[in-house]
Length: 195
Image (spheres, helix red, strand yellow):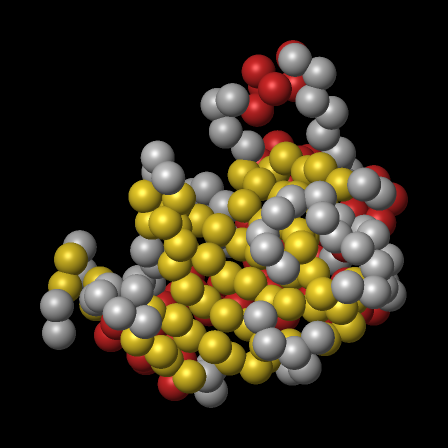
């Protein structure tokens, strides 16, 4: 077992996590791995992606059939958030002061994103994520603002670095389970198969 900062290697952690969630672990060459698991009716994929200029990122995604064009972005606020607001970026608030202080929201439908994120389970999971996180809906090519009714879209999460902490991976999958279930209850998404 190889350790860095007390955590197992990515391969060891992700193999263990795959077994825990009843998923499959795939070695994709080199140090790039993937876990595919079914959570309820949804197929969720955990992998890594290289982002030019900032290195490897852990990514979680699930493809869904969009029932309408509802789209959103949730990201942890950063030092640059106040600057963006001064330059005219308008954020959406859900009305929970603690959540609104920590997360910046963008959506094509403020009422529906408030409905989605007002779910207490979803708020608790988001609040339990430490560090930067970016969750959005997008087209299957990963392009933001490309959500289309009747087409395959995806829920997409990225965080910097390669996550090897199984507890954090559990939180990500819990977040996806809750978000996808709420999107389905709202009539915005249906399971669509492979991601």
